[in-house]
Image (cartoon, rainbow, N blue to C red):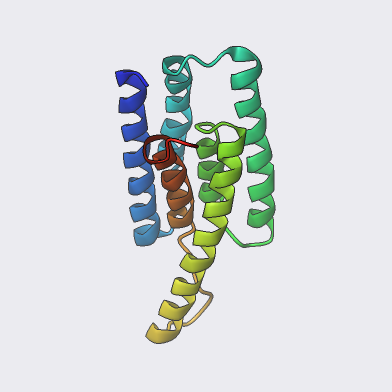
Length: 155
């Protein structure tokens, strides 16, 4: 991995952490942050030597599928629009099997984040619907997947 690719991975990780923190604080993920995550995938592809066809085409197509899948979650009220966009932007960074791993970890951590949000809502006895900062689960899924490149030499 080149220094450029490594630097972009670090930036990606920092942006994910920032998105998670802001989602906990405000329950929103800003479009500008999602755009930066998506746009930084392009120089990452270049730095890692991906070819336009089929590598980059697959990543864009799978990211579109992730967007469509998460949009269903938005439609039924499970997540916000920023969550949908961030999930799709994260998918741009991973190979097809990596996206699968990302979605699994995101879903499992999402269940834990939701459970924690429900418990917090009940303990504090807040009125209204429980808000879930799903950006935390998205960040966990992407960060776990990102660290596989460095910690799991068999991945």
